[in-house]
Image (tube, rainbow, N blue to C red; front, side, top):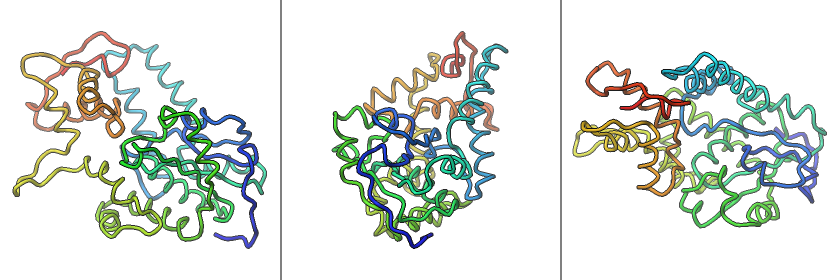
Length: 310
C-alpha cells in the first residue's frame, strides 16, 4: 500500500533496515537494523495462508532433526534446542517481519537483498507479500540486486554470493532502486501463485512471463527439476530423484553424504539440490508403499547424512 509519503534513498547501510539471508547479512558491514531470513523456500511445503505456511515449514524442518535413525536422546534434545533458537531469532512467518519492523524507526527505508536465482527470487516474492500483509508502503522499499556471471545463468544462490569477489554487495547497494508499485504487487502475486495448492497458476505465469521480473522464465528452470518429466508419453522421475537413484547401487551401500558428494562432483555446484533435501528424499523413498524401492542399514554417525546407508 501507499501512505502518500516520500521516502529518501538511504545513503549508507546504517540508514536502512536490511532484510536478507543470514549469509548475506554477515557479509555487509555497518548494518544497524537487520531482519535475517533463515528459511530457504525453494524446497519443502508452503502455503499462501501465513499460519498454515508457518506450521508446514516448522513441521518440515523438524523432520530433519527428529526423524533421525540411531540419534541419541541427548542429540535429539540438542537438535530441538537449536531449532527452537532458530525459530526465535529468525523469520519464518509474515507476522514475524511485522513484529521485527516495529522495533526499528518507522521512517527507516527497507532494503531487500536479492539475486536473479530461483531461491533468491522466491524469498523476495515471499518478503514482498509479507510487507504487503504488514501494510508497509511500497515507496519505503528498495532493492539491492546482486548479479554475477553465474547468477545471470541462475546458478548461484545469494547465500553464497560473497564468494564471487570483493565489492559485489557494495556495487549492489550503490545501484539501489525503489521497488515500485508494479514490482511490489507483482512479487506478492507470484508468491501467492507459487504457494497455491495447484502449480497450474504459477506455471501459467512462468509461461506468460513478467514485465516486472523478466528473469522469471530463466530462474524457474531450477523449479522444473522438482517435477516428473514426460518423455515419449512416459512419466519419468524428476531430475533430483533420478540422480539419487543413479547414484545408488545394488552392490554397495551409500550414505546420504556419498550421494551429495557425487552430485557436487558431477555438477560442480549444489545450488538447487542441498544436502538435506537428498536425505529427505531418501527417507521418503524408504517409506514408499512399494517396500522394494529402497533398503536401508543403520550406521554410526551424528546426523541423518551419516546414520543411514541405502
